[in-house]
Length: 128
Image 1 (cartoon, rainbow, N blue to C red):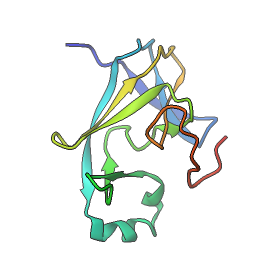
Image 2 (cartoon, rainbow, N blue to C red; image 1 turned 45 degrees about the vertical axis):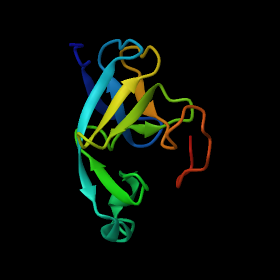
Image 3 (cartoon, one colour; image 1 turned 120 degrees about the horizontal axis):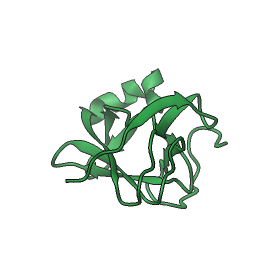
Image 4 (tube, rainbow, N blue to C red; image 1 turned 180 degrees about the vertical axis):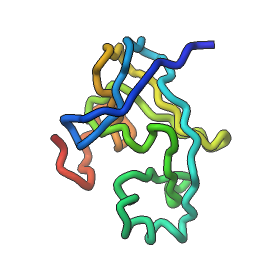
């Protein structure tokens, strides 16, 4: 079994705070496996009116539900050419974060909120 690398939350130049590597992480390494709290489709419009709007992910086969990702999952910042990917595991009810390239110690770990590397579709905030 692969050892999961140490990570921490710190001040980010991208958006207030973010998740950082406290040691080098090799490509393909699982960074974190986060359990999720499912937000039923009927409750998503309520969440959209709160601060949690900026921290939840869409979820489910039709992407009509939402999830709050526990661990550091809801704190990873967005980058078009991110250094990590997220994988939604519907069966285990987790979101898994995996390095898609080498990440050096001290580097911020980012994901592309649009789900695909290089996908530069607009997001709901100004990208730095």
